[in-house]
Image (cartoon, rainbow, N blue to C red; front, side, top):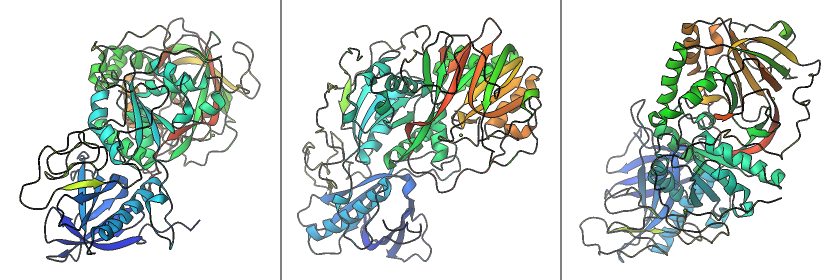
Length: 624
């Protein structure tokens, strides 16, 4: 394999016309990180302004053809989602169209446009370009097959609308193949994945909050073939309230912190780029002996109270947690409990914060480190490669996948014919040219055995079904917990134990507790560690509020709060001694009582897209 090229090394360079503006000539230069655009005529630019298209903002591309028989040019259309000019401006879709007209015949111009489109798609998908070889569509692998699971009740109940208006158009632009299913009840996704033929899919992507991914993960690990099933790459597109994992994916991709639609578009762009990363999974054994698996967190006390008690405020979206925090501070509770953990064995390579965290008496030597099939009903309410009307790049153009193209542009192969003929002034209308052997948004997908393709419908009820008690069902399969003795038996001597009054205990795997709260700023998806945080009783309401406010930037460990504790661990046990309380696993309420958990490094696979070129600004880590 050829060595990686520098970000500024030109891969392709050529002259194109501008569309729809006539008479403008542009010089395009493609590098591994961006498309550089410079105007040549009518007035050359010494310093191009706005002529840089970062590949991190590109979802896909296609080639187009004019409807005019006399137009021998071919057209390259690139779909971009640039950030707004203002610092907090949101992303907006923009289609950049360039005219390849350097040759006398359409076939030659089309070959050039397709060469550029192929090179661009190879860069987006992480496919190496040949050093001196010919760039042809055969370089690209087949279209990835995604199973999209949408929870229409997620967050503020707008998940299906956001998926339809933003996610599906972007996936179509990227040339990905997909089937979509709307879940109808709690644990529906779990039942679906338990009955899937996983060989028909390359990945499963949830369009909701963290709860739907929790169902999918535990469904895979409860299959008889769990060892293979858990390798299925999982993705998340945030349409929930907390969106913690999506916040961590957004940071991994090098984007600025984002919420709402911007976070969804960022994660969708990363999904279109492809790429996965090992994901640590936490095995949690509950008091009844049942077991579930967590990709996010186990919480007790203040955090779990806010999470569960604000369920009735779901219509507020992420603001429900702000309201819950205020209400929780007004009625601050403490909980007596015994917390034990197995410290990580490696030294932390993180910068210590200016103020060391207080340690328990038994912690003084600790050096924290950052490490038979069930019959199911057939799937339904599914749509395969749904052709959707995409925002048009120009009145004379439409995007691939539109079932009702605007007059002047239609699909090649499979798209409906225009109802009107082009009769306007200016440039002739264009129609998409397939870049790959099958069009990126072809509605002709191979039928998949568990799917019945029918148009998606919203459930008749506008309200989500009531949750069932003990919403987090246990799993009887999965890897053994070799670090954990049976719950209720004595722990080994190398464990640390403390019994105190706590305001909260949080065991978290990734960096984010929600999209805008960085609880473990130094955490990685595959560091093999549980990041254990706790707040002891005696803390003032103002000090606790300062911790949560500082958590928005991941700076809470630098506050030097004597009530805040931290340890990087491989396993832990929590024994609540207060008779009443709430426990959550990945935001889902579980039975109250003793529990214990062990980290299984890299057990799962997470779709993350490529890592960002520049990581986030360094944050102070917990002291050792």
